Amino acid sequence: KSAVHRICSGQVIFDLSSAVKELVENSLDAGATTVEVALQCYGEKSFKVADNGSGIAPSNFQALALKHHTSKISDFSDLNSVTTFGFRGEALSSLCALGKLTVETRTKDEPVGTRLEFAHSGVVTSEGKTARPVGTAVTIENLFSTLPVRSKEFSRNIRKEYAKVIALLNAYALIAKGVRIVCTNTTGKNSKMVVLRTQGSSSLKDNIITAFGLNTFKCLDSFNVTIADGCQTEGFLSKPGPGSGRNSGDRQFFYVNGRPVDMPKVTKLVNELYRSSNSKQYPVAILNLCIPTTSYDVNVTPDKRKIFFASERAILLSLREAIENLYCPQQC
Ligand code: ADP
Ligand code: MG
Image (tube, rainbow, N blue to C red; front, top):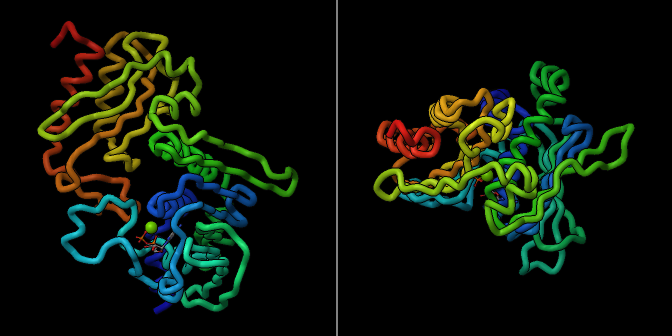
């Protein structure tokens, strides 16, 4: 039974960035305004996500890392209106099956924090008091140590996995308003290095300036259009013409209602239309689709990065029209 749990967990958490993603989303769901990600050896040895969110109430301790324990959804009909990142109660139990989980937490009602250690099964093995401010810190040591083959793969690819983590944190840093995100890495040779630090600005514009600088921002046009009934875009795209883009698509971030997602068709559309306006570059694109929660489904893949839209064709068509207006107005 535990072997099956381990294998299934390896499908929910399939690499370092999917692991960090779940922890960061938990912090955001808990209303944190600061999220600190601390990697040891690029995450290979351990990673810790610490926040100043609500903390976890003692009544939740025992079930915290058990499968399908969630405090965020109580009724199946809630699924149509989830606004939190998480709702399946899979992340902590999966992470726990794949590495050594430790949680330190304190709510505002507790005078002192609690430190919890867990067995791979999700059972609490130790509980003690610890001094800490309100909020939660979750640490995973030796991710994938319970899956030997994956573990080797993980070590071999660690630099690539690390780069993915930084890209992922950038995606949240851009879209999260009023949340300060810091990432540090500590290696044997170097002491702690800050690899990413954001201000937690209250606007997308300021977040972009912090992340990519004012010069990049000056090459962007804001892209706020209505694309269908009750659907809007918010965001920024490179101005038309050469010189405003990049040599690779490394600064393209897509979201649905603030959730970072992969939208290959939208990515292709943006690239095609930008490049048809006489440019060999790739546009910078930070694009958030604001659409009713009932008109799409994120439950396609375990990491919720793939999206099914109820009316994909209509959305793509009106997006195309709006982007054409920006990049090739003469054709419209
Ligand atoms: P989900 O996010 O789908 O509910 P998780 O396995 O990610 O499931 O987390 C399980 C539960 O643990 C959450 O529902 C939440 O109650 C609690 N939790 C996890 N991380 C945090 C955190 N950083 N702050 C507050 N509560 C947390
Ligand atoms: Mg979660």
